[in-house]
Amino acid sequence: MENNIIKGEWNEVIENSRAVWELLRNQEEIEDLLIRDGYSEQAFENLNKSIKELFNFSSKFHHKEDRGKRIMPEIKASKEDAYLIYSLSMNLVNLISKKFQRLQS
Image (tube, rainbow, N blue to C red; front, side, top):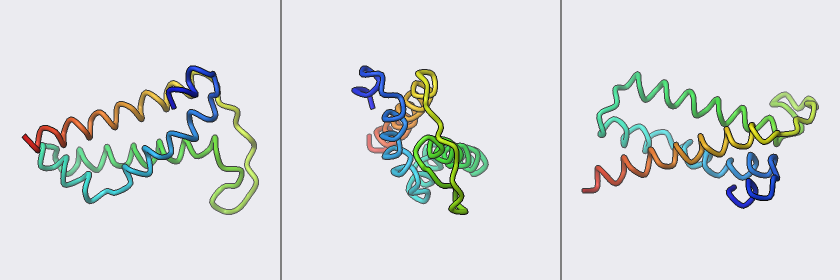
């Protein structure tokens, strides 16, 4: 993603972010980690919903069809779109890795 940011390939940044969103879809492990670090069940549910919606949002830049197999208009990502998804992806990776590191020590 970082290389695509440097190159200005905005749609590629968003497409490559899918790997992060896919990793975060393992809800049981993420829930266990966050609950053990002190999150309430409601806090986890709110974060989890937002992750799902961010995945759905980023998918709009990638998929040509919606879930009902209807053709969607192509969305061309702009710099600010790419930076939004990039920064959120990196911040979620940071959040999970720091929580994991804390519980391991």
